[in-house]
Amino acid sequence: MKSKGKRLKELMAAPEIVIIPGAYDGYSARLVEAAGFACASASGAGISESHLGWADKGVMSFKDNVAACRDIAAFSNLLLLADADTGYGNAVTVHFVVRAFEDAGVASVMIEDQVWPKRCGHMAGKQVISAEEMVQKVRAGAEAKRDPDFCIRARTDAAGPLGINAAIDRLNMYAEAGADLLFADALMSAEDIEKVARNVPKPLTVNMGLGIRSRKTTPLIHPKKMQAMGVAAVSYPRLLSTSAMRGMMNGMEAFKGMLAGSEPIDRPDLLVSFEELNALTGFDELTAMDARYATQPLPSRAAE
Image 1: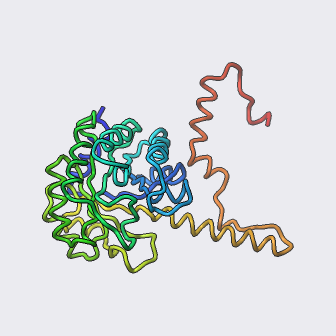
Image 2: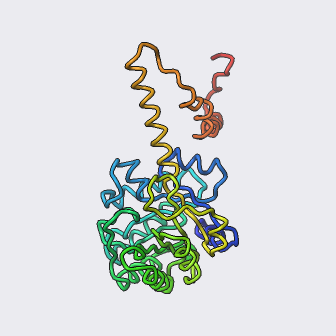
Image 3: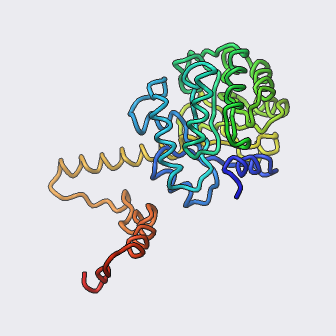
């Protein structure tokens, strides 16, 4: 049986661009898989915001991150691309970080070249470490993995502070150091995206800010156009998290309206059915396990 890393490499090498929605918890991962996607991105921002309630500014610990990814990988067949931020230390730390994420059951882990504490790629004030230090981190990660097909994804945030040519130079250095996949964040034009994709030797991932209402993000470009530019994969890390936030805000407004009035809440447009919820979260599978391992007959529905 092919490992998750091997399957991910094959997808990334295919001519068709890979679409990678963001998944940050059980609900979101179930939804991504139910929709038929093969991959999901467990972004550090999504996990920090949803699990800890803090913005992506280096608050989340290594253990918090690994635990969240392990929980998703345990029930899902998704090829999960984890995000280890800056590697939580130096090159030696990265060695153990990569092993931990591989053991957690993900297909890939990403290391970036920001200064710690890192911040979301589209926040102002980003700084990057030296290219030489990042090369050593990538090298340590590549040498640490047990499965040769486990994917090390190297990210650069250099386009903003240092310019697009520096970002390309860095990605080439990271590929030579052993990165399997590359990631250039916060590219601010279609021309920059194509320039990077055409000048790096490994499959390139680009983030799209769909789900963030801001003019200061990478422009929204259709995946087919990016495929023609040479991009291997496009990630939408915040689409589900921000749409979920909007849905919960709408739900709370309805709830507050009920409390201010005299009638109970009745907003079926804000809800899913009990049956939909159970179908998504594996109720039938658990019921089948109950029947398989039961020591006495289970009550029939007629008895209920």
